[in-house]
Length: 614
Figure 1 (cartoon, rainbow, N blue to C red):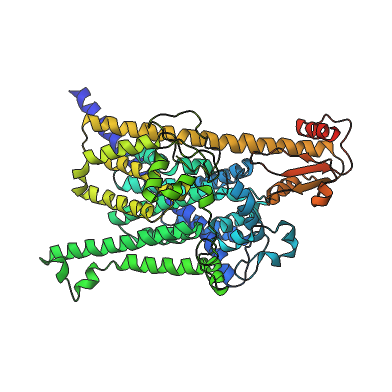
Figure 2 (figure 1 turned 180 degrees about the horizontal axis):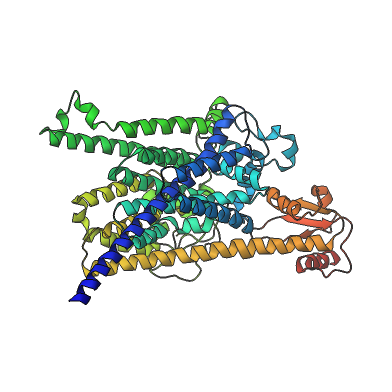
């Protein structure tokens, strides 16, 4: 009896301690996410609002944003010391990863880095054209994209580049934003009575999609948009659970940030914001009418103030004002030049960036058909000029001739080799639990489905995974909802199958993205730079075919390798070696004083000498 009582008491003590620790984990996660978002938001708003007053990005912004983040972490937080230590560690690790893993992507090296270089060197895009900066004219290229696209990622990244002196440092934003969405999600799920392990696991599934993994080491922005949408959808659930000022601040933050990541982000948050406002109006009016024995249509007079969602309306208005101010470039600069605010993608003289990148067969298909083909075809990077179109495959299997995820721009089957199978399992699971959506928890998750589905429906190019990263969230939401239900064994097995295939989708993207970035670009480029430094005493003459020379020239400066750029006429004199690259980079180099005779030549230089002799 004594032993039974002793074990019984120890069980409850252990349970209490576990519960206390769980609450601490959720509190730390939430406050840490607030600090990360405050840091990122402060960097963006200080910079973009500073443009309005004629200022350019200043290194002081980084330190101001850092102290704002610390204030968020410390204010009325019993775990402030843990939060501050974790914040500093995450920030430091993000910068180190960004510096260690170089961007190997086409878009990242072609125009994102150009924009970052200009912004970090004093360019004010609201009052200046890129060509106005004389010192940077050697790098002038891609003006149409740099000047006319929204610039959240470039602006925040420029603060890192200015602070750490390396063009790669700006990619720290990817890791920080990813961490912010992850920790915020863990905190939100904790408030919904999820256990720590389930909350962490669900957020790993939600945040780390194949789109994110294939882009996280580059300056591509679709993974950032995916993280912003994760925060937005979780924030709405959080507001439905128990609203407060901090949660409304997160709502404003994510509206502003997502709208400035890319144009589709503006469309997404617009639709989500309007639908959520209408939903809240209807739900409040229904609740008010029911509590007073009235119908939905009879709550007039003073009742309006009770059912009108004032906080959501005010937050939305603040968000719109900040979107307009922070997005003055490109929206107002385009209008001032008598163009569409969304130029060059919409309006007169718009540029079609889709047709040439889509399979030719897509000309004959509507939006749902294109999405269906993409989800159930082999993972491949097919464009308009590709000899073959999308090829069907058996779900749940990886077949031959499927592309890897080293390219951050995978088009057909971009959510992974097995995602078509996950879609099938999700449909079966939804059908089996359809009646559960009438429950209070079911209504919240049903709202999520409505909002995610609406953002997918408004995008005519949702077949392209990186243009609709929120598609990945649908099976994750189903899995999350299932933990509120008492499931039959068959449904438990079905849920585990969904989880298994989602994880199998994530791993190749993680592996390939890291492998290509670290081994096939960073490692190989470092080897080439070391070869150039030890085989030539003079300057290297550098000639480029495409317009992405900035990235490589920055690496030459980093390794203190003297160089001079030459034109086509000088290149035609011969003796140039093609520097190896993974994306067909047309970069050619020749030592102006001749190669050292006492140094063994690397393979790429030997091959060029053989061609010269021939």
